[in-house]
Length: 252
Image 1 (cartoon, rainbow, N blue to C red):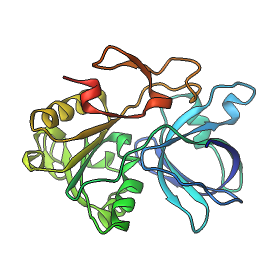
Image 2 (tube, rainbow, N blue to C red):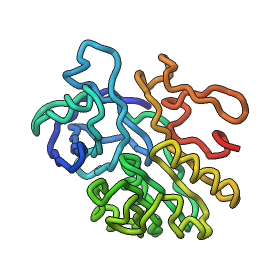
Image 3 (cartoon, rainbow, N blue to C red):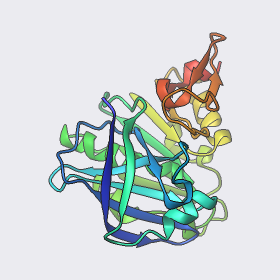
């Protein structure tokens, strides 16, 4: 079931390189939310317009009925949202899309850039069943690495940076952990990175699931701007049938 509600901004954390994080609190009990689901946010920039901003859910706190959103400023909508102040109301539709299944004992999560966002909550869900997943984070430099301390509390963190300013020098796909056997791999980030990880997983017969970052204007499958073609020749809406897809649905 989907909900449309006003949330109060109770925390705002400004990060480096045009990133920020909001904590949004509801006055009602949150429904069950899966890791990898997203919300559609109405901002002052798009009030009066049916189109909202799709943002991945970074974390959930049921004790305070709060959700966290990790956001990169990439356009007018996210820039307007970055000006939101503590105490203001934000209207969101949630939870949207299909998330990650919490399965397998040895798990690897691979995130690049803001693609790390859904994995904090997913890592916490694994912790609840006694599993500490591995998390491979790729970034251009150490200044582009986000929420490392929080990830380290729930996952075994591995890092690559393009120029070696932190962790292993090189691309995510060059990290040695990808040569280890895993029950399941999850990935979110730039399309070339996800495709490379997906192809590696397919070759090793490892179940792999990708969270796509397609443009999603409506979030309910009406506008069709987020359609992707799958390997069976069908077109699927990322917002309603994703954003999580099996690697085998997207690549051969």
